[in-house]
Each structure stands twice: as structure tokens, then as C-alpha cells.
Image (cartoon, rainbow over all chains, first blue to last red; front, side):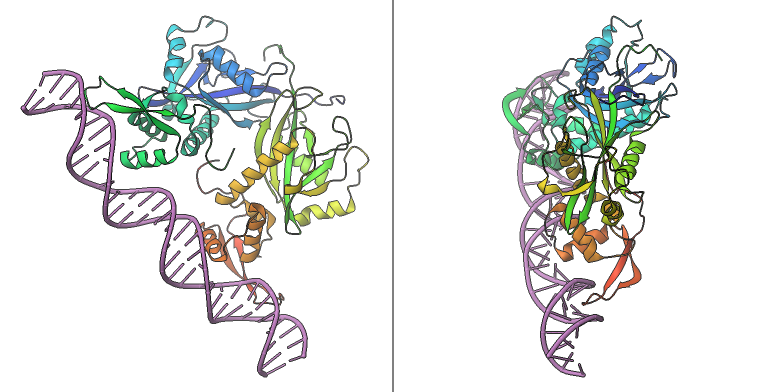
Length: 231
Length: 231
DNA sequence: TTTAATAGTGTTTATTATACACTAACACTA
DNA sequence: TAGTGTTAGTGTATAATAAACACTATTAAA
């Protein structure tokens, strides 16, 4: 490689981690330990290590700051690289968004992570429609992530990442309603989702529910798969 | 900022420059002057300068390697950051795609850029559906850019960037047909595009065409504007 | 056995997309 | 100046998709 006649910007990976808790779509944020924006909530992020890809770094941030091991959905969102976004200097952020089951988060959240003193602040979940003032341009990032998440729900199977292996149709619909922020028609939703051919009925039945038991469905694949255009 | 305990990856901005020439969708590529992939066609790209954003770098590459000054459409595509994509070391590429009028390109292409000796190889246009073997992961980047370009045409006004201020409906349609790679129905196209409410008829008329003169239209705005969901 | 609660199911209407063919207006030429 | 070639411009019928809407079924609990 030619002599470097410039100074590489710093590169971070920041992840917008969505989950549903108590029927509300929430984002996981940490409190910043250092200036700038000391004490402000911020997206969990890490600097890229040598030879580490952004996706690997995002997974590392996910693991180390939230305890989420795997199973969620994670994809690149956008790269934010304005020279003004970090007062300390030029820092590029490759951003990701993740969708994970709350139960995967809660364990670590409840216990509070062991190394909370070392700059790894206690992560908390914040409702996306009541976000506090955030560090850097992180609010903008979350808003973009939310648009993308909603768009993805329309033509992919990503919702599998916040559902258990076997789920009732009503649980599926509830997840959509919470993320889109509006009620959906039961019959139309069922028709449309079935026509996507992403799920199949199983022989499982959900009992003990004080009402009519529900047939349980499962996703044909619990790997990300897309139906139409775009990536 | 904390002491940096890692080595920043190099960051480049690479741009997929689309244009239509002789009724064919083409991409502008340069021949690499150095190893690796010496002599292979590659996307025009530059390393980010200190405090330079990716978009600024992409514009710089566009200007310096193609002579395009402005007027085209340019947006971030994706960030490619596998550690294996560049054999020299970890290099992150923030990629962009551009859509520009051929006449803006051709001037410089014809003359051949003044500083062609200094690693700035003569840029050439290649049909997107007959690409040669490319350097790095640049083929993959172009394929993604093409998907994105087509998707964007569906719900934005980006096509303005390869049309003159005043244009006939048939010119508009032809641009779509070339980019999508298939014929479109004249009446349906007209109906649908008008319903998008992006253009308006003018009093201009295209004459001297050996056939019935065409009313000319113009875009209400020649700035990027989006209709629905997504960015 | 009655009640409360959620599961499950079809049809009608409106909207949007598709398929398809002829007349209009000009330039050119014989 | 009539005729021909060439592209502009227009509407309707049909198919596909989306939206609106209400009742019966099955269980647990009282």
C-alpha cells in the first residue's frame, strides 16, 4: 500500500437494538461514561479492532453490552460519517440494527452486567416513541433504523427473531402492530401473511389460556430471507 | 478520546457511476495502475482525507476521475468492510452510486483527462450487463448498486439526473426501459408516472423530429425527493 | 351451565395494475 | 399538395390486490 498521506478516521460500529417489552417497542441504550455527552444515553457501540469487520464489531457490542449471544436479526443500516458528528474528531460510524427477543436481553439486564464500573454502563430499554435526548447523532440513527425495520417487516421474515419457535397467529400480529404502531385487521393480516408463504402450521397447540386454544405456527426458515427487490 | 488501542482501517469511497450511452446502461470504470489487480477495471475511488466525509470524497472522485462537476444524483449505497476484500490490508469502502447525464461525462472522456499518467487511468464506460472481471469486490458492488437504482426509480424522481430540463415523455420512458432492461407499455407508463405527480407539462414543444412534435415536460423539482417509505 | 376470552373464518367493495389499438400531427418526398 | 413514414397521444375492459367488515368456535373458570 502506498504511503498513507492522510489520517484514517476512527471507525465505530453502533447498533440500534430493538425489542418488544410489555407490548412496547423499545431500544436498548447505555449511559455514556465519558465526555462528550457524559451521562447521556447512547447507542451501544465499539471501535473496530484490527481486521475486524463492522458486523463482527456490532456482534461484539451486542454480546458485551447486552449479553445477547445469537438468534437475533442484525443488518447494516447506514454509515454516518459527517466530520461534525463527534466533537473529538472525525469518527465514522457504521450502524446496524438488531431485532432480538426480550427474554434474551432481560437476563443480563436484570442482573446488571458484571463489569458495570468500567465504562460499560447499565443498559436500559427506552420506548422508541419517548426517547430522551441522546448523545451524538444517535437519535437520527434510531429514526432511520425504525423506518428500515418497518420496511423490512413488509417483505421479509425478520420478525422470526422476536418470536419463539412456535407461535400463535395473534402473537405474530401483535408484533407487527407494536412495531407499526397501529392496529391491523385480523382477517386481512392472516390472509396476507399466509400468502407470503413464510410460515407453516404445526401440530402444536397453545393451551392453558383461559380461552380457545390457538394453533401454533413456525417459520419455514429462521434465517433472514427476502421476498422481493432490494438486498 | 481514549488512547487508541487499535489500528484504524483505511477508508475509501468508491462510486458506481451509471449513465446511459447509445441506449445502453453503462458504468464508468478505470483501469488500475497498481497492484493488486493491476490493469483490471475498477470503480473510481479515493481514500478519505482528514476530516473528509464519504460523500465529499465520492464527489471528489467523481470530479477528479470523470470531470463530472455536479447535477447528477449521488447517494450512499452500502459499506463493504470484509477484512478479506483487499489483500493489502483491512480497507473499508463506503460505496456510493451516481446517475449522471452522459454529456457531462463525455467531454472529459473524449479529451482524456490531463493527468492520465499519474495513476489516473483513462476512464471508460462498460455496459452493465457485459462487465469484465473486476478488481476487488467491485462486481458485487455494481450489482447491488443496480438493484438499488432500479428500486429508486420506482418511487423517487432520481431519473431527472439523466434527463435534460425539458424532455418528452418518450425520453423519460426510454430511460426507464433501459435501466429496467425491458419494454414498458406506453399508456400505462404515462398514467402511472403522471400519478406520481413529479413532473408538469410545459409550453415547450419538441420540433424538427420528422414526426409529430412532442409536448415537453419538466420535473417539479430537480432535487432528490422520495415519495414513500425508506430514506 | 353459564360466562369471559380469544381463535378462527368469507364476502363484498374499492383500488391498483395490466393488456391492448387506433387517431393525430408533423417532416419529407414524389 | 397528396401521400407516406414516424412518433405522439389517448381510453377502456379485465385481472389482481387491498380494505372493510361480524359472526361462530373452543376452551377455562366460575
